[in-house]
Length: 253
Image 1 (tube, rainbow, N blue to C red):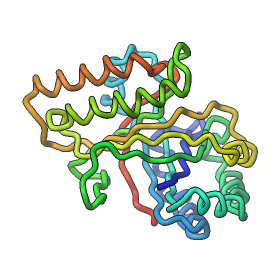
Image 2 (cartoon, rainbow, N blue to C red; image 1 turned 90 degrees about the vertical axis):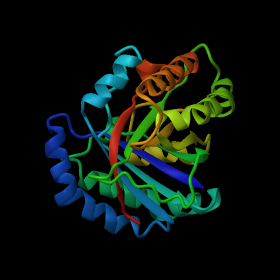
Image 3 (cartoon, rainbow, N blue to C red; image 1 turned 180 degrees about the horizontal axis):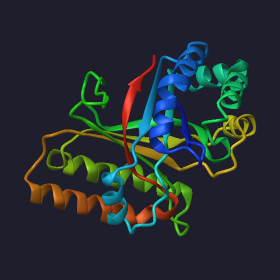
Image 4 (cartoon, rainbow, N blue to C red; image 1 turned 45 degrees about the horizontal axis):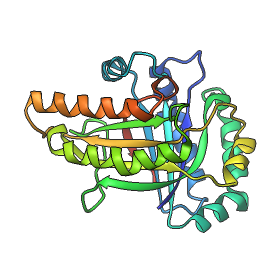
């Protein structure tokens, strides 16, 4: 599946609580109305959480990660051609108009977007896990940049073919029910997205997403699995240019 990933930050004067209230009252209805015109097969919102879990994950990775994003909008199409047609055929204009209408809440300059392809690594069937508010599932979003001493191609290869299998091996002890890598496509539409949406912050190499449940191994086994993951991440990820946070999901289409 091909995705549009849009990582959004709130305006700095808004608290996380005020932003989430605005999402419920004003932003979500407008997004739901607009997304129906983009021809996507699925649309999901992830409301980022600023909480102790971020502090713990940040500390384990050196303590200098970027702040969590406040909202992630994810759109799915069956093929790259369908995604490009939807975005180029007026979709970018509709997105840009929506962002402009929500400038009181959304910090567009610091909100990157890109086209991506997903690579499931730990994947149940049917693919219907949803970390909604109050569910037993936690959803982790990990938009990441590779280290400067790695080429982009080398980092992608390692992430997909070395790090992915390591996470799969430890998944039973980690309580991971689903783990998907979502790699940015190097596609001309990404430049069009930047021009239309007005962001000036770098896009990411991609992101990892993890659904964690109440299961897993012993507390010590979970600690060992977490330690192994972080040690391997440090080989190719620039933590200071990345972030890792929990969020709850809202299915929109």
